[in-house]
Every structure is written in structure tokens, then in C-alpha cells.
Length: 177
Image (cartoon, rainbow, N blue to C red; front, side, top):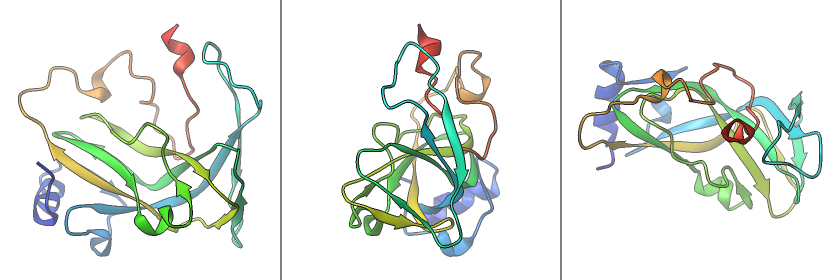
């Protein structure tokens, strides 16, 4: 079941969901809008290797925006820090962002129960688009979980994305080998 606006507010009140900063105007009928932070990153190498640590170059989106280009993967992050302790968060792009030809995630739209961090976005586009820090970029949708949970993400020793950072995090796939 997808959480309604009322259920999201209850979960925030009960600290089952944490959103910082929280703005009640960003609460939709069954989702919460998140915004693009000022932090972007691109990989240093054009050819990426799943078995090694691919380094990124971080930069700040200027006040007058930044034009993203097709054929480049940009890593962004949300302005909002979130924690989800009893439900499964899904991050989806806003329709107005999609209508600009921007995707905000390739495959990583689902979070885990226990995820406590800023969201890293995998941004790509079909034609050049100027983007801005602070623009609405996506929406979090929360699903209830059936049954007890043994292995919260923030308690797993093998979790690769537990280091709290407002900057986008590059792939840690290499840690799987």
C-alpha cells in the first residue's frame, strides 16, 4: 500500500520518516517532493569499470544554472536528508522533469527500510537542458512493509551507502568483487 499524505504526516510525527528540511507545501496527495541540491559530479573516466573504484569530479551548480548534456551521466543529490525506518521509500522523477527529457535514476529508485541519507540521483537527458540547484526534481513515495524486518539498511555492515554525505556518491559496485 502507498502512504497517503495523512499517513506520511503521521509517520513524520512518529519519527518513522525523517525529512530535513521538511516543508509542508512539498507534501502531495501520496508523495513528498524533493529538490536538486547544488552538488553535481561526473566520472573522471569515460569508460567505467565495475571491478574498480571509478572516481568522480564534484562541482557546484552555478546560480545561473548548468546545462546537462546527452551522453553524460551526472550524479546529483537531493537537498533533503531522509530517514525511513518502517516503510520502503521509492524515488520517482516529477512529470514536469520527465517532460524536459530528464531521467533522475537509471535503476536505483527504490530505497531500503533503514536508509538514512541524502539521495544520489543518476541524471541523464535526451537533449541539452539547463538545470538549477533547488529545483523540484523528484518525489518520494512510501510503501508499507508486510512482516518484521531483520536487516535494516543502516545496521548492515555490508551496506555501501551509509556514509552520510550531501554530495552524490559514486558507484561502490567494486566492493562486491
